[in-house]
Image 1 (tube, rainbow, N blue to C red):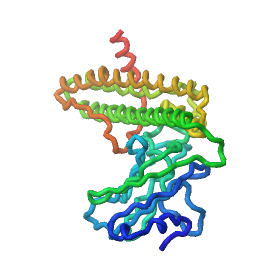
Image 2: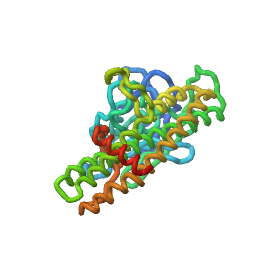
Image 3: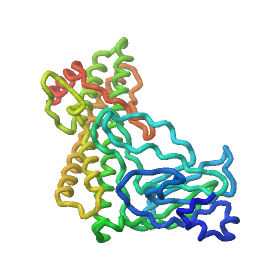
Image 4: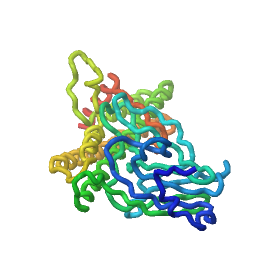
Length: 359
């Protein structure tokens, strides 16, 4: 059946649709609105969904052995900024502590024979997840700006494309193309920083986890003390590196929901994204804060590389002397985010001794 709140497919029907086997209708104009987030097909009896309503025709439902139907959104430079498939998403791990605002996972793209519809909420792909680090912050991806985008539908080695126009809420004041470009460029930089912070954190934690395991395995072998000292020093350095957002400790070690440490720089970066993801222009204060946060992350990233080059190499050398496998692997994209490895008292002592030795 047809949903009559969108007559665009009816207006485009002709003999080509029936013969195509797979046909993507040109979407109607999409508006940036500020109410809520939607995914998936629209529901009957409700107002039109917010975002881009995409409709397409399939001659037959794909067989189980066929590849998935893929729906992609490309920007004006031809870069894929969002991707959906008909393959059901794997159950996501609840990796963030309470108080983090996120979106539900995107539903699979429908692949029924006949007319199908899907709604893109005009937001870029979700950020890389990490665990045990941030509270009371939005991790909802930012919205794209007004402009012309490409919708690409692919299946069974074939693809079809249509252009999609995105415009701002007509009730808002008009902004120039250069103002929107500045806003989107800054949002892209900040979003990339969040991904980089979380990927690097996951990588460091994966190394710390393996170090813990290898210390335990080496306990009964030769050079166990050397392995333990190098491994605990490495774990301590990683734990200390994670304290990127300084926070004064509460009396007697008290910790509650409000005082839970943010630790990673992604918390202030995500807060800034929420501020910038409004109608432009971007304020000078926001630009200044973005420059400072990106500079701080550049320094933290360099520290992470130094830890991997020195602390990790020292630990791997200790493993080799103990006759153990010495390759410590980092985090692989797509794997669950590793938990934080805490700074134990013995590890803190090992770090202090290592710092004294280096001096």
